[in-house]
Length: 362
Image (cartoon, rainbow, N blue to C red; front, side, top):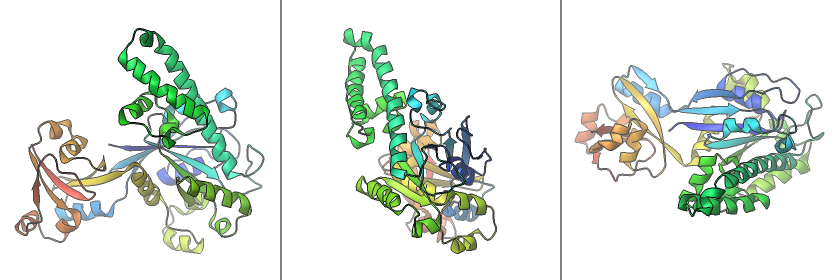
């Protein structure tokens, strides 16, 4: 599977700056609302040192990383669901993403306007959450109206969808995120079918400079947002999007990070957080032709994992040779690893682990 993340936030929160940093694309970043109107999409290779080592081990002709897509859309404002700003029609561009990264402005600057007139991270988080919920409510209500005839006829699928969406509608109206309630797998399928954004996992990105992090200008506001995220057990990271963007191509970026007192960030940390949040892992295939990384969900059996390569690998699966990356790299060859008993033959029920190197037999 390919990981995709939608980037949302208020205008001038740093969304496009973050997008540019992650993807090296260039989208407008002028200092006024709604600068980014059309969605920008960037596909990024997932950095993985294990992949490079395996490619060297196999003397591969090609090395192919796993990828993640980032989708940056126009900034939302309070009232977007009612048509304010650009409205919320463009939210359709992130309905199919796996997760949402909400960029929240913590930095203060007289040179960069704030659509709400002041910097208040918790208020901004609430604005975006409310607008996404209202957008989902509109979709739910429209769909419930659409299936009403089927429900009256007693159609089982329509009745099930009505039950699930009625519960979801009540949650959203009570300002309860769909991720905060328990839904069965078949219930969550209904959300995916409709592309309900508030049902997706969220990663909150606090855009704050390293200096402000140590001594925030709005200390009370900073402490409020941190407390809220921790109390709710929500996934978040803190970063300085502007400085990250400015030094991303510098040869001495590592030294510059120390100068600016910045934690290691970049594509690696962002993606690692997303992988953990979505419970994704990586397995590898390697040989003279190519070494490649594949993304699957945690606890996937090896037969299903094969479908990441091609459906035939699942349909015609017989068995597979498996070895951990670390064990393989310590040897001179596959045959040596086999002789030492490190290369195992596994059946269809084997659960793939992160870092497994697999040779499928079909």
